[in-house]
Image (tube, rainbow, N blue to C red; front, side, top):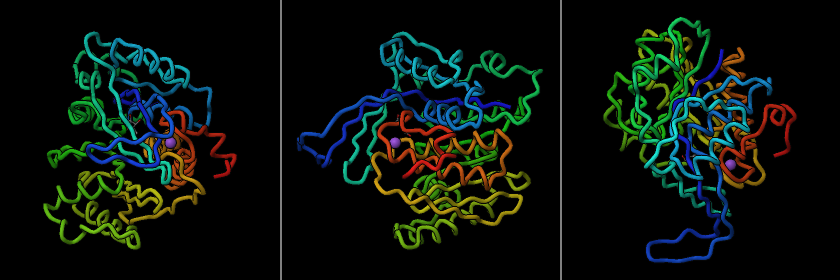
Length: 335
Ligand code: RIB
Ligand code: NA
């Protein structure tokens, strides 16, 4: 049992503002913060904080930072959160990955520009994989989590499926990129938000734009129910396997389906009084989900727990710093 994240580590430069400027405009923002982030590290920290036994050090991250103060701070925060960083390279001559983020005060919505920097140096090396995933260890239900903020997550998934088939691969294809249809078949648990679900649907069906182009909040859940059913029917994750697809719809809740039942299930979102900052809400969901699956929870219980955890994350500023602990989720923290 245990979790390995292969992914990005970013330094987030965040401006909280009432208004978002257009081209050529300048506004005074409200305040500025720096946070440790990156989808890979956020998800690793989320697994660590949201596992039932807070003392366990079951999570590690594989990735790269630059040899600079941002990288130093990132490694420090990762360690404080009990994420093992032995497999994080410190690369000279490249800057640590950054995310420049604008958060709108009124809605908590964000706009993010990332520069990969050292994350782009995270590429598969055979000898490294042999060392990180030794052959003769029995992995049990070891989970590997990947996102798309590193160069080629598909290469890792392929290597793992071919060489270590017992590992469970969780993929969050964010930011979305079109992949060869076969690549999705290496995924055991696919977690997408509404934008990514729609993009995947368009890639797989080669259509969809006219049928589903309008995002009408009223029928968000119905619309994505149809999209998810179609993705399952088409066997995106492979027809003969028991893959799971989860679609997170933010304030509209979560839809999910597994090949085993292929019925689409739904969990509504928690009511949140004041959304402060949605950054890392998706990462919190994913980390909560995997922490629960790793400790033997059913998929239904894991999804419900993850929904509660991400509802707390949106009430707090920042990325990894906004992720609640397991005790906070269980203690019914007031939203
Ligand atoms: O998912 C949130 C993350 O996306 C931020 O922490 C930022 O680094 C970007 O990668
Ligand atoms: Na947040």
